Amino acid sequence: MLATETALAQLRGGAEWLQRQLDEFKARLDGLQTATAGAEDAIATEVARRERLSKDLDFIRSDLIYHRGQARDLIEALRGADGRGHRADGLQTAGGTPLPGALPHPQGPAATTASAGQPADPQAVTPSSSSSPKTVATEASPAPVGLTVDDRLDAYYVAFEEEFRGSPEQIRETQVGYIADLHAAQVVTADSPVLDLGCGRGEWLALLAEHGLSARGVDTNSVMVARCREQGLVAQQADALAVLQALPDAALGAVTAFHLIEHLPFELLHALLEQAHRALCPGGVLILETPNPENVLVGSHTFYHDPTHRNPMTPTATRFLVRYLGFTDPEIRRLHPYPEQAKVPGTDPLTERVNGHLCGPQDFAVIARKPWPQPKAEPNSQPADALPKEAPGGPAGCAPDASAAAQPTFETSTASAPITALDEAEPSHS
Image 1 (tube, rainbow, N blue to C red):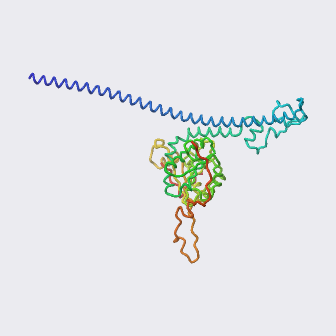
Image 2 (cartoon, rainbow, N blue to C red):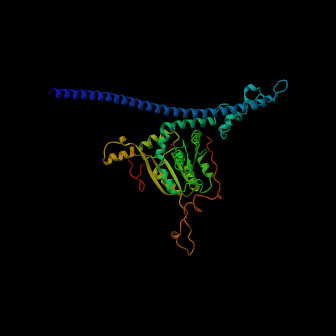
Image 3 (spheres, helix red, strand yellow):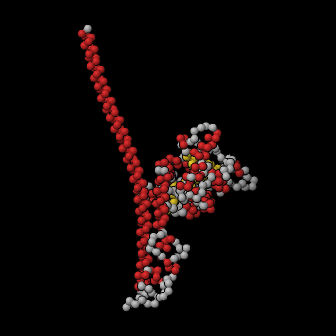
């Protein structure tokens, strides 16, 4: 009996020791969980801080470009004023008495062109409306009104993109699906690259480079082009239509434009796509992405967040336009619907229709191709459909030989639940 009690006491003591060990481990685990939660909060805070710093750096970069332009224009204006002042001083006699037709210099450079007793020539202070902004800044007024205005707007648009378009990583995720279209076409080479119109911050150009596809970008925004070059991407600050017009025929493997066409007047859009068709090689790919006005919230509200938007293009009208201009197989892809939690609950037809128009795809893309030339049938020859077709890279393909026209040079760096399908018959929404 005594031995049993002793054994029980030992077991009880062991159980108590184990309980104490468990309590200690639990306390340590609670401490680790608390420390982990604190570390996660610290990481989230640091990520947010770095994102703010990145945006601040973008603003600083934009401000530097703006102030550099201000200083440049001010220096040019001062030089122009100083030159006119020296010319006025030369009209005086050795004794310092002004000659007829010369006014004292302190009255300003514009006054040096006035005759004695007559007002200054109004053309000296008010240039004609055909004068360029830079001419106005250097010849009429020391106030910088030329490039500085553009720089301010460029800086604003960079900040707007950061706030509303999404991070570069998010944009790249939405664009990666187009890589398969370019690989499938088998026409993008170093001699027939992708030309991205309105390349913006360079998300698409970087994605193309990662997948081994040669690409160049063009944008009128100086800040955007500078950001592309900082990443080692090939980008040019220029007008997209002018760049296309300068290219020889069949010089490109693909032309892409993400959220560009809604900024353009129709006449310019028509000319841009005409030139894209000419500059693409046979089999070349055209990719256009733009806001989808089939989504009522997009067409009536979010589209107008961007003050540079002119008017939305519908999927049907965009597909018709590219087909009319000679592209083949235009495909409409409706993209980026609102998340499920934004939809009205319910599965009845009316609720689904409401959700389709309010929470459906916010963007759409049209993907089309330039057709291969059809061989001409000769008399007493095989039917045209029996003739072998030219393969990519042949005489009519996208890889010109050394004798082909040289590609234009680009500046390089030195250091952006489906709606019921309407593809075949779209009901009127007017």
